[in-house]
Length: 373
Length: 137
Image (cartoon, rainbow over all chains, first blue to last red; front, side, top):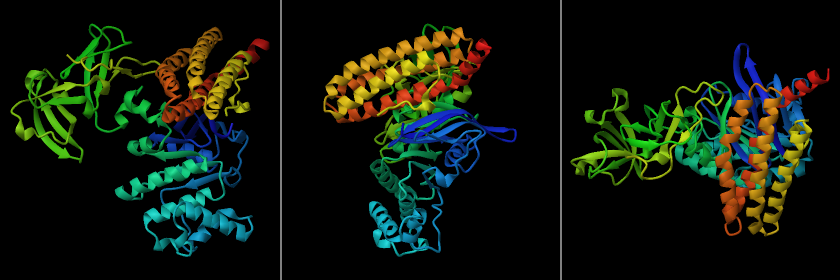
């Protein structure tokens, strides 16, 4: 089947194991993001797929052809891959069109130039064909790098933090353009990123790599965000409020209220993670524990609000300060009494005593709006 | 279309046949979508989910029988796929009237089978091969 198939890849640098039995399949035309913190092995996996490192254990197959196993090592330039790195790696002494035709060696020059111009057209860069890289902005260089990577019609495109050198506005614009070009090309793409929002924006599927070099979870961005199966995965997506509790009567109780739980036995100690948007503030102060607002930070549509639970809430000292994502219209200056509750859809519960293979497997709270009591 | 080339084979006949059956259903779903008959997706995906659950049960029994040391982990992995199967059914119900559901269904079915099911099954391929060699010796 066309695409990239990685099976059981483990890799170590000396004693340091960076990948542990990683497997994935990316069909042609789809984009998978490898998301993880520094040292999680995501770039190593990309380098192994590219052939920039020799495989120690496992198998890598591109379009049904084995390109790497412990006995086979097809060199990078025979794998039919395109590479794009964060520094674009354009040749400074070559014009833009020569940069793009560089990967088309073996093709007659007129044909190569036609192909290069076609690719530059796809990324709206034809008028810069005779310019040199230093004359272009970061975003323009990124577009040229994309044209160069796609010109030889690779079977697989490997992107390593391709937008990290761009400023915020340019990054938003370029990644949308890139996605359009990639979808039109029909190539299987692996993108490495440490930016969860970027992964959510770009990916058909996200693979989360944990610190041990293991793939912890795979799924649509929606699956990963709303149904994390591991505390590490839940915490990857920004600020998180953490509580510890015990299951009693099919519920966990945290200072913000009670949350019903399925699938975990009575008496089990658990970690409860609540996203900032899962803490609901009530400016009329009717229900739930009273909070003091420490600070508000307007982000545009939303506020990030730091709050502190009152002593009467019964919260432990290290559970009193919370982050809340509130609507921009939230103005604590206009309230005498503000209380807080929890939306169970944004609360994730993980057993603290599970040392088995699925350690930390997530048990999402029952998604009913009145579960918190 | 899905085709199970050699890198997707476990070399365990019963499980490979079940994978092939699932692949055949995926290909039927892709075909009815391409043919403009997406209203047929719901029945096909119900059959796919039913067959997938039967496959999981058969596989779990086999792994216990051969003494695979990570059988419980694999069982937990199967359980973790329940929510995805629910989504597939929901997408399939909407596929006849919603093009986003059709696109998501096509994409997710292929990922589900090829990445979540078959590629993850490769974890125990070498164990089964070694076990077969030992038993035959």
